[in-house]
Structures are given as C-alpha cells and as structure tokens.
Picture 1 (cartoon, helix red, strand yellow):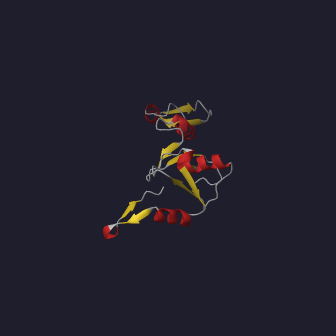
Picture 2 (cartoon, one colour):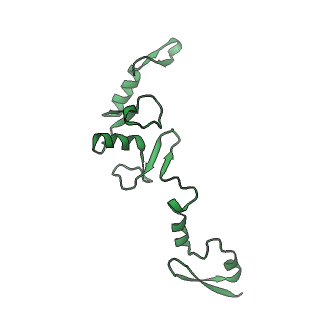
Picture 3 (cartoon, helix red, strand yellow):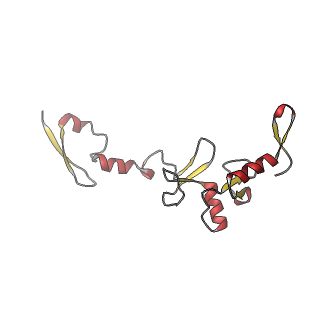
Length: 142
C-alpha cells in the first residue's frame, strides 16, 4: 500500500500515512498535538469566553491563575465581584450570599459576605418563618 509523507503546517513535524488515511484528513494536515491546540478555547466553536453557568445556576469564570480556583480553573463570579469590592482575596471559608436569591445576579449591591457557612445558614434560618405543617416561607426581613 502506498504511503504519503505529510508535514504539519504549524510545527513542521513530519509523519508518514497510508494513502487512504491521508485522503480522510479532517485536521487540515495538522499533527494531533497542533490540532488539539487549534481546538482549545477561543478556537473552539463552543467557546463562550471562559464564562459558564454551573448546574446550580451560579456563574463561573475561568481564571486558572486565581489562588482559590477550582480543579478546572473556574471560580464563582460572585466571589470575584466581592474580592474586587474588598480589594483582597476571599478566604476559602468565607461565603457570598445573594440578597435577592438570584444566583446569577452578581451586582455588588446584591452581595453580602459571611465569615463562614454556619453564619450564612443561621442567616437563612432567621429570615424564614415556619408555617403550618413545618413548611418554611420567606419573612419580610432581607
């Protein structure tokens, strides 16, 4: 079976392919490594600028260099907004609360900082009142 030599247009790496494989190239002649680099981030048609919404409805921003970024380099936008307001990084245990309950409303006037999750939970317990059958409803306190 005839073989054909292909040179990657980006890194100039040479590779040898069987002729039928060369005809099926979907990567524009790029080697696998260069193809992956071309498909990363802004080159990918699904790239949304590093801003996503997680399953809980919170907006996450890609910031790999942030000291408290999660495993894949994302951090909550509400945390970033609060850090900008305070002029410092938040501590890992500090919790950001959305006053109006809308998780993607990250305006500074809508955010409150709690020193830990316990204080945040007790705030929620104080701002709800128990009605019949043990159900909770929001009170007028905000």
